[in-house]
Length: 199
Image (cartoon, rainbow, N blue to C red; front, top):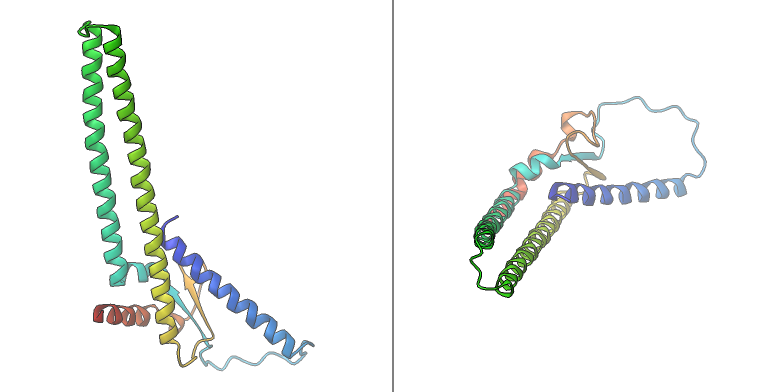
């Protein structure tokens, strides 16, 4: 699961809980639906905002640095595995050449060499699994840090309570259309970067 998806899921989970609480608290206050006509829209901004998560990931300094570190670690792991794989392939070709030319003194010696190569192959597979697991765990940890950083900043950003709901949006998944005044992404990214750069 990529980091964008984890952040999205986290923010969506919070939004669903907030909507759930708002829905049931408003129902308990007014159990009978009002038959009064809807008020005409006056142009006032609603206490709702949304964030473009993709923009945050592309512009938040911590997310950029974390992604670069993760990509670098993936490249290092791939290089390490490819180097070991090439070495193993060369050893297997050498074994095959010796075997075809009857270069081994005995069948027992050939069998030991073959078993040694199989062990190296198994070790390489285990190394690949270990490196993949490490990268996955690091990715998950970074996603949690990003989600925590965003949530922490939103608590500061919305300390005055001007927004009752802040939604997440990724590639127009949740907010299909809205007035630009509800998009607080730029303000949030600037604030998060200012706070991160102070650290």
